[in-house]
Image (tube, rainbow over all chains, first blue to last red; front, side, top):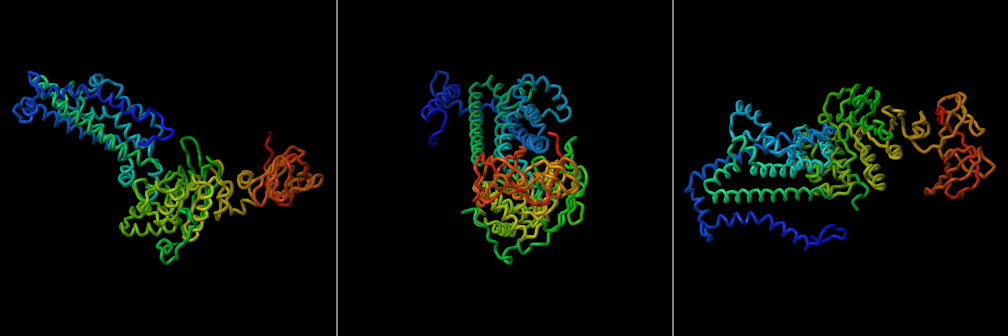
Amino acid sequence: MSRAAGDIGPAPVTRWIIGALVGAIFAIPLVSTLLYTLQDADGALTLDHWISLFSAANPSVIKPLTAGLGNSLVLAVVTVVIVIVLLAPTMILVNLRFPGMKAAFEFIALLPISIPAIVVVVGLTPIYLQIGRTLGTGAWTLAFAYGVTVLPFAYRSIQASIDAVDLRTLTEASRSLGANWATVFITVLVPNLRSGLLAASLISIAVVLGEFTIASLLNRQVLQTALVVVGKIDPYASAIFTLLALTFCFLLLLALGFAARGRSRKVRS
Amino acid sequence: MTDAPLNLPPTGDNLLLADAGTGTRVDLVDVVKDYGSTRVLHGLDLRIRPGEFVSLLGPSGCGKTTALRVLAGLEDASGGSVLMDGVDVSAVPVNKRDIGMVFQAYSLFPHLRVRENTAYGLRRRKVARAEALQRAQDALELVGLGGFADRYPHQLSGGQQQRVALARALVTAPRVLLLDEPLSALDAKVRVQLRDEIRRLQLRLGITTVFVTHDQEEALAVSDRIAVMNAGRIEQIGTPEELYSAPATAFTAAFVGLSSIVSAVAEGARARVWGRELTLLEPASGDVELFLRPEHLSLVPSGSGDAQGIVQESTFLGSIRRTLVRTDAGELVRVQHDAALRPEFGESVGVRLSDHPVTSRPLTPA
């Protein structure tokens, strides 16, 4: 972290102060929630709420939570599959074969970020009526909607790693050396887009685990809806699970940061 | 240290050299290529002999790279066919055409070491890993990079990367080697060095090679024959000597080598210029423009020679000097002469024509 001559931006000390201030502001609700779960009715510190939750004494609290968490994890997996199997190859195709469509594709991919979830649900309701008739009403079907929700984030991650390599030349080199399309994909594209695909997957998981509006309005039980339900029965359990979920997402984002760093190290040459 | 001249190992020790064959005959027959409503190749005919080094030379946008990509199978032709040893391969996809290609952009796989990069084509041909890596090592020795097998591409210089790309293209002993401006990203010194090494290696391996370039000096230096391309057509194809000394068209005369343009009056195979008569390479009549090579003009004392003029500039080029003269008729001509002669700016001089046959084109209304 040596400071280069042409370095722009605040000095290291200033950076640390800014970082600490921002961190403190973000930490206030989290620490408050943590303290809340560690207090009994009189305000004394206690581990009772944590212990009672994990001793499973209260099935009316644990059951919706485990069911919601289970559904959310399944949704995360299906959404990642959609991103990797559908979005990534489409983007590669657009970049290689139809570069003229790049701008239109980017616009469509980024569109979901500007449409409120509540509006999306209005459009999704009749579609899910049809999905319910053909594929059933299993919670996993929400992944189709989530595939749209994560589109902007996944798109940016993958596009960044596509832009970092000369995709066309690498593909043509591979083809000229005798590789068919499947081999090009496995031996050249996936290894070189690895960090982008990883980042897209992690951010998709984070978005899916944090999604509430669509699931609630379409009457599916996921982690976030379960937290609300449980919150009404046992506010302590709800707070504890919120903390755990946030910690998990935080760790995911850290992993994402490392994935991105791996990419930038490779690009420098 | 790293771009040291190439020392070819003895043939017996190197699988690639031991396998050197006689080369493949390659024919482009009446190849047409359209992009939408734009025709970029107008019925291209090109017959390449086995083991021949042919350059496609032309300005950017002339269709030379498209022609190469059609030959490679990276683009489908809109019409016509590509033949290898007489067999139509037009419908064969690029990965089955058995070609080796070096690209203008750096094309090494960033996630693979140099050795694995080089072995990539062999692995796609189901050669066992150990043997593929051994042959890759042989190919790297050929391009003088045997000691760099464990590096990653980003640890190499541009010239080294293109050498590895060359080794990677040659290691499978392809039927034809395609070079798409492989030197244009390199600095001048490395460019000349690698250019000469490519030629030496090509002669040694006897591989049919097509080289796309916009640099006429590069094409003249290494080619058996050069096809000069302009606006989707081959203007002229011939040996470097033929193209330089007897350009068939005005475009070739202007593009290959340096020419000065002067106006003249043509009558059959003769043209009158500056009170002299010169032989035309192609008969013409009426007002024409002639292409004069700088070495066919000489500088003489003012008052003598075929035309009088004023020195505009003089450039020192080592053993020779090139001087730009504005004649009394207002034409600018470049004269090549001994470096010992040092004309001053604004000096009055005479210019003398030699008797070499010249190329002409009808006078274009200004």
